[in-house]
Length: 495
Image 1 (spheres, rainbow, N blue to C red):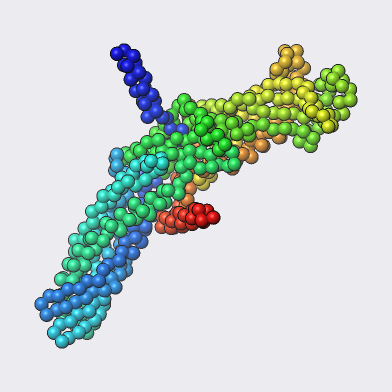
Image 2: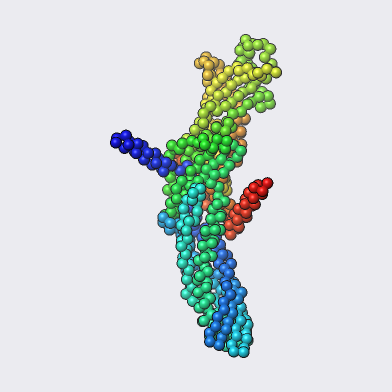
């Protein structure tokens, strides 16, 4: 009985640990960001409602027979629109006391009189209340799961034109009642399609698991449903890099979980030490952190110093090797480690440096093996949607792997090796990191006016949002991208 109980506790503890996966990356959109998004949402809704198609209406009232065709919405005035958060649900788009102008054609038969003309109508007191439920889908992507919509038009009036416009004026109330009913029935389905189809297709273009370069990729899947309060929308992402060639090999996240406390800016991005460590770990497993310095890559003064240092050893091995080329083989021997403090971010890296002599037509001969300990300052920056890191060498130390006596002999090499690192290796590292990695934002939306703050264990970047495209353009672009992907897949399948 006891063994079963212990087994149960073990399984329960594993499930708790699995469900409590810490986030490596968090994004907060505040009510200030929502204010900017409100304008784009309002324009998008106006465009969607303008495309509402109305069916032909036919009917009879006594001696009157009528047909209504070519209903077109000419103007929407959603002046009293608001977009805000619904705690524990998602977003609310609310329109109050707005108006819609439309036109339609009439054909009316009264006894033997037949009349056609245009009708200008206006709907007043338009109220639309739309709630969007936001969730994490099975792929870890943000998604609109459900929409609750309520639309109501309080009154509608019409003005007839044509030869018998005044005579048929009394029919306006009869016709507009039916038109108001139809409009009420059309508004919510149009908004349902806009949210569940069009906006969701835009959300699907935001990268969840994607390649960064030819060596590594990044996993931005949500680890839980978004957290919505009256002031913000918080999204918790896995924020983990992976080696493309070994995608099942990953780093366990034991880092401090980032915390966002601010609301002053439109958006905040928080990154833990794990976010950076997983990237360094992935590059390490991909074999990127190794280089071979030889020939023209070797600074002349360093080569001269190496020859002087190892001259006696070379002569003991083989005097014929005195003029053979020398090389340095650098290979990081363990995953680099990031440390983030309020004073800034640093990266500690340890590597094995082998000094080799390269006799022509023969295998390389090792002259020495030393351990190199380095510490870099890491400056994090954001530009648009791309996060980048710039490294500067802060501390450098070498010692022999063979003897303490040789470590003393290596002291003259400290300065030239440090210079070589700054000139050759550090630019190589920055060449990879300056390209940056995209953060999970839709195309057309960028960070501006960024401020980076360093905390113990994590970084918080506060910024404002800039829309380089309108929401309609972003949605259309996502639909075109989805169509291109579908066509490419179909072509590949056919081939």
